[in-house]
Structures are given as C-alpha cells and as structure tokens.
Image: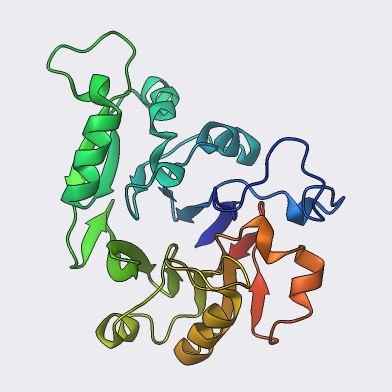
Length: 253
C-alpha cells in the first residue's frame, strides 16, 4: 500500500489574508497545509478519503491519473466541498465515481450537489454512484474497509482501517469497543488540532495519549490548525514513534 498525504490541515484556525503568524510566514514547505485528505494506492486501485475544498489542486499536485473511489468520514464542508471535481475522472474513465458514505452524509451530498443527482441532468455534471456504509466492514474494489466510529463532539464520524493502516480525523472521543478495531495497526493517523482545549477535536496532548494507548508501530498527526504551531518546533515535542504528517508525505506499507 502506498499512502500519500494530500492535505494535513483544516479550516479550523485558518488565518485571515495578510496574517503574519509564524506558520503563515514559515519558509518550511511542511507548514503549508491544505485541507485534510489522503490517497491510498493498493495494487492497481486508487482510493481517496475525503474531498475537501482543495481537492482539485491536490489531485493535480500529486499527479493522480485515475481514481476508483472516494470514502467520506463525515459531511462537514472541509471534507466534502471538492466532490464536484470528480467530473474530470468521469470524463477520462468514462464511468461514474463510486462514493462510499453513511446515509446521513449521503443526504448532505445530495443537498450540496443537487444538480449531480437530478432526474434530468445538465450535460457535464459529475457522475456519482452512492454506496451506503454502516458501522460494519465493507469492500471497495475488493479491498476490505473497517469503519471506526468516533465522536466529533456530538456528531458520529467514521475513521477507516484498511489492512495495517488506520486513519481518523475529527475525533474527540472514541469508545473502547471502537479502539479495539485499531489495535495492531502498523500505521495510525489521527487528528491533533492544537494545544489549547477544543470541544470537538483532540488537542496535541490528547492525540499523544491516544496514540500511546493504541501503540501502533508509527503514528502520524494530521488535521492540524495553524494554532498548533510550526512543524519543526512541534516535532521536537513528540515521542520517537509519533510524527507530524505533512502535505506530500508518502509512506509505503
């Protein structure tokens, strides 16, 4: 499995134009964080988890030529807003995009991209085939995916485990039963929004504690706001088995 971090940031804490904070002015490319998304290449299949507002640019930047499916964690705008841009893959692949999401998330997609689901479609609209998922294992192109339900304050959100790779964004609390699904992961990716207390996201300390409990061989933090701080500075505060992810990071698993 090849894992490419398309984006490791979030709309939370994004500064206004002209901001001169240390992250905005940093010359380090690892501090340039687009909205969170990850690309998985498994054998000849290509899967993306979440298509946020930066989706089109992320696909171009990563040189993605084919996309077989999109998995959605939840319906917030910073995770779904780029779905319209699957139309390029529709055109070149001559088929609808397979989208996997909870029924509640599907309803949001239908509201947001109503024109793609109209009974009479305008020529050129995105072609999307919705697949409903629940908190039970399912298959995407023959690949088993295990949903992991976490709570984003009061909103249920899905993380996903695929083989030895587990990916979670927008988590604040996770039941013991769901944590068990993550045990034995070689690579765990989890959100670490900022150092300060937050109502719906892990803080840096909470993310470290969670990673320590799960005991994956390697943990990478994602969904990081500008408030977390610069990559180089925060990296020195982390245990050896934990790293900050960054846009463009590639892992082979």
